[in-house]
Each structure stands twice: as structure tokens, then as C-alpha cells.
Length: 284
Image (cartoon, rainbow, N blue to C red; front, side):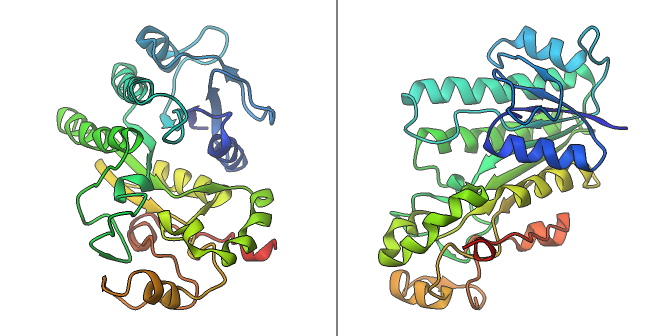
């Protein structure tokens, strides 16, 4: 049985990730400052800002485990505006650096980490270069939180150059939702601008967890980043109508139909086999 540490395993996406990995046969350790209410995996309290603690956690803990095969790094201040900018920068950048470099010390070459849809240019006060948006254009950070995610992706390029055996999978998650969050979705129809900041996109936490597992399982080495979103939007209005009303002058690189997402998951489908199955429309 492969053993994986999940940083931030008590968080919103982390809980779904731990559940999915346990259900699919992984031996999971939850590295978080707080225990999870789900209690599905052993919990180890960890301060990611303390490099010594991170090295110790990834190399083995007495009476708990003596090795790890992979790391899923989700722990972070999860959005702009929750703390002062410098605090977000220090916490998120340092935590990611510590995880990756401690993993190298521990001999761990398989890492999946949470990047963010925000590197695509969110909120789209300045429109994206084309639709659907994808991984092909350069990041456009518009906040300190997004700047850190962009710098993380750049840092991992170099870490993979230093360690050719490293497989690092960055997942640019859209807005993570639980089933109970879906009750609010019908209200978006009254004002489409409530959700245009991320092109009306979201990701069901269960499908986000699927993407993480597929990232752990992908073959090859080196860094790859993937946009991870649900295949549909949060809206009842069809996507072509949203594009025409809000972005009529943008290049449309391929046709979109029905309620199709404008955060392209084509690369994730092609290279990860990502096939998201959960929609808010099944619950409202």
C-alpha cells in the first residue's frame, strides 16, 4: 500500500482528497495544524513554516510511519483578502518551498500541489486573451495570492531541473464546492456579474479529489499544470449566451455548447484521464 501525506488534509478540498485516497487504497497521513472532523486518516500537527518540522514529518515519525511515497500539498491561506498581503506571501510561498525541498531530502519524487485558477488572470477585470481559457498563455496574477501561485509554478520548473526524477503536478483548481453550497447557485441568474470573475466556473470537491489522485498516478517526470474545473458552469443561462453578452469581442478558439465551462479542462482530460462526474444540477 502506497503512503501519501496530505498537507491541509483538514481543509475543504483536503477532506475530500483524504476520503478519496483512503477509499482507493492509499495509506494517508493528514498533516495539518488542526485535526479533521472526518477522522479518516491519522493526523499529525504540523507548522509548514518550520522547515525542521516539515523534514521530520516527511522522513518519518516514531510510532506512526517510517516512509512516504508521495505528497499532496494543499495547505495554504486559501484566497486573497483573508490576511494582509505580506502574510499571505510568507505563509504560502514558504510552505510550498519547505514541502518541495523537504520532499527531496526524504527521497520523495511524486508531488501534487494546489495551484489556482487565479493565475489565469482572475478576477477577469482585464479580459483573458481568448476563450475558453487554458494552460497555454502566460500567468496573469492580479493579487498577492495569485502572485504566489505563479511563483510556485516557476519555482517548481527549477526544482524539476535540479531533480530530473521529480514528478510535480500542479492543479489550477477552480472554486471548490460541496453539495450544500449548491443551494446558492440559482440566485446567480438574477445577476450574471456575481460570478463572471471566474467565468462562472467551479469544481465539485469530489471531482477535485479525483484530479489529485490522477495526478499522483500519472506517468512520467517533470512539471505539468492542469486547469481543474467542473465541465459545466454555475449558470442556467447557456454558455454561448454568456459569452455573447459579456465577452462579445474575445476570440473563441473553439465552439462551446450548452452549459460548458469556459475554463478548459481539455488538457486534464487528455493527459490525466480526468472525467468529472458531479454537477450542481444534480442537487438543486
